[in-house]
Amino acid sequence: MTFQMTLEWQHWQGANIKRLADQGDKLAIRLIAAYRALYVNKSDPYLQSEWMKVADDYCRRDLMLATRTILQDRFGHKEPKNLKRMDS
Image (spheres, rainbow, N blue to C red):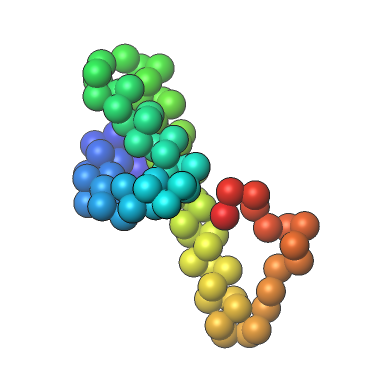
């Protein structure tokens, strides 16, 4: 996604991200913190890239969780404990 597309995505997902952060989700908390740092200085390329990295991690985690749920529902497949991500 481009920078502008990611901004729009976070705008539309803001309530979900905030709810997860309030529940203690570390990745959602990191995403909010990175956005707040970026908001102070939107022209800083370092802050832009850091925020984009955290947003990418957040999206990938959601995609992995969705895929895991589909596999479990469809085939009764469960991943071994040692293969599951620590933050999910």
